[in-house]
Image (tube, rainbow, N blue to C red; front, side, top):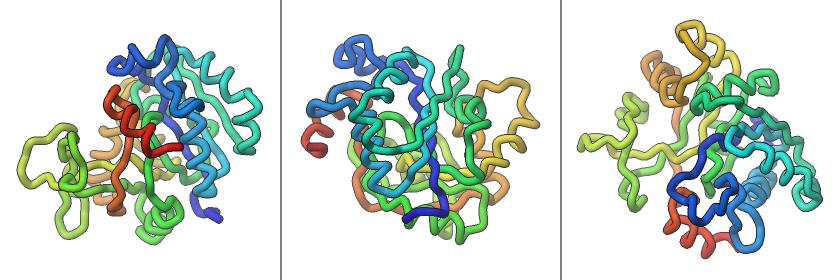
Amino acid sequence: MNKIVNQIVILNGGKGSRVKSIASGKPKCLIDINNKPFLYRQLKLIKKNNVKNVVICCAYKSEMIINEIEKKYIKDLKLNIKISTEKKLLGTGGAILNAYKYLEDNFFIIYGDSWLKVNFNKVAKKFIDSKKCGLMTLIKSSLVKNHKPNVKVKNNTIISYKKNSIINDFKFIDYGLIILKKNVLLNFKKNLKTNKFDLNKLIKSLIENNNLSNYNVDNQFYTIGTPQDIKAIKKIIK
């Protein structure tokens, strides 16, 4: 059982504009995947990885997410779920900071549209052994279709992180599972003029201070970010 990092933050604040026609007015995480909402599928995967405490950060139609987690089939997962809502969009980093009162000392972060086939325990062990304040999971861009590399690695160390990079020496992609220490948020906030910021800014700060470890994954990741992605994931999740 994973007792090293036993909490995960799910980022569910976005509107899911690219899958609007499929979502039918619901938040993206509630899109049906083979007769169950994707949120349930993701929570079931989290439970399988022995993570018991969950914080869901949401903004767009958050009341629909709150109503869903009150249903019996989700309660039967026996997870400790807390909801953190935003009155206005705060960005991915701001959403986590907004949930600060719920956070444990170390916690995973996952995007609300991601399905990740990775062993959370092994990722957590690498994080603890590194003695750094954060960890990012990576996958070689050659293993992934339709996603541009955004991470540069040298001597097994992340030295740059840029979304949608076209630079040739960027050979890796952010896999979508991150670990942070809680105290990193307050230290980073000291240099901000607003509570609204993207998580990638915090990640870049950790890289600059050589305080971000990494864990390489070989398994393909899946998302529900586009109609094509949803079609593909329905073949994976039964």
